[in-house]
Image 1 (cartoon, rainbow, N blue to C red):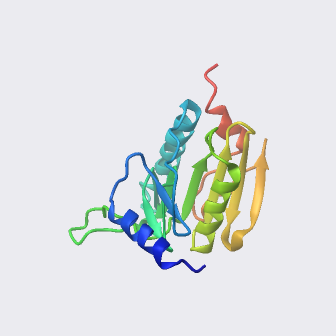
Image 2 (cartoon, helix red, strand yellow):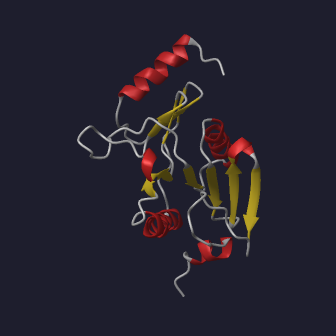
Length: 187
């Protein structure tokens, strides 16, 4: 992809701002509209997924799931709903503390579609993650109760019902689409 000098300067200016308020992303040399605010379903899925993933991977020092973490790579800046990094790839400061900036692609990206988001736009972002080294991405659609998986090589599959969801290699978690969406019920 060729980015003209004006777009490149826009991205450089954008990336110099550690935090934009509201949170915005850049893709293909363009600053993208702010991320929509999450609703209750989105927030509960995001929180529960982080808890479940971290309960399995953190104690083993295998991986760590981060909610709403700004990741800059391949000339783009994204803020996935959940970014999962293998333990050995988590950026650190010289002191050994976690880095403030993550200038690498996540190993696993999870996006939860909000009602005001366009599925094609979010899927395009996940395909871009795949092009830049992300091993696995999920696009969770609470309305349709489906999960789109994006794999290395930009292979895309749709999961629903009793289908087992794909996991980042090495993550020992069995979760079906039905189980994922059952977290939204309080009955």
